[in-house]
Length: 331
Image (cartoon, rainbow, N blue to C red; front, side, top):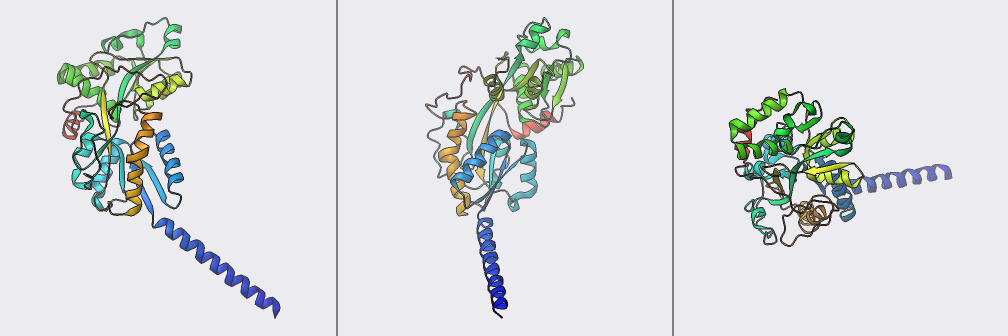
């Protein structure tokens, strides 16, 4: 009899503990915040760690999507999307989906430099990033090759199978190279150049991601990469024998932004996470990863990062223009 009572007591206790666990899990599930991010994996990992530290009772999910995938998915899902906060999406795409974004006009832009005060009341700039030419100086020396000094140099036969560039159709980084040369040379000359480059035998690969060319450089598969300045600096600081070059007509660049999906702005958890990005994480990203200037008086804190980047003319970098130009890209 005593054994029966003991078993009954243990069963009740187990049920109570199970209920408490379920309620606890439900509470956390009810505070889920989903972020669609087009930032690099290592930055997303840093953000997730910081968010979990700041909001231990929230279930925060960061889902990586390339810029094109992010924009396409949000357009398809509309306001019924699982996404609460969109992060790191190129401003051209954001300008084309302002109907999906909540009004965040209460967030001041006074601390932004003038050319980064974009987005109206619908989004804020998260960061600016540029592209550059990165060379493995050891590999070029071993092969007895000089460093290229212009885009035209990349057509020289001595660089056969030694170059990689992100594919503009799948990579925002690849697209800014295309757009910068279209602006500088005119559309016909720019596309003629990429036609020659693709047929020269020098292009080892048009990679699917913006980080792809520098990854190939790290692996020793190529000697010249058209890639992201921020990634090149990281690899330099890791001891890679890389040199960063900027060709005329200057470094291609773009800005990426962040916003809240319409209908999600009144969710307490979403609002608190967005506030943390605005007040803390955007600045931390500048200090640790992407220091190119978006704020007035912004200090350079990333070791070895170029401080005098000669930015290219990126006028007309809109979503419609991107769609039109990519319709002509066949490489």
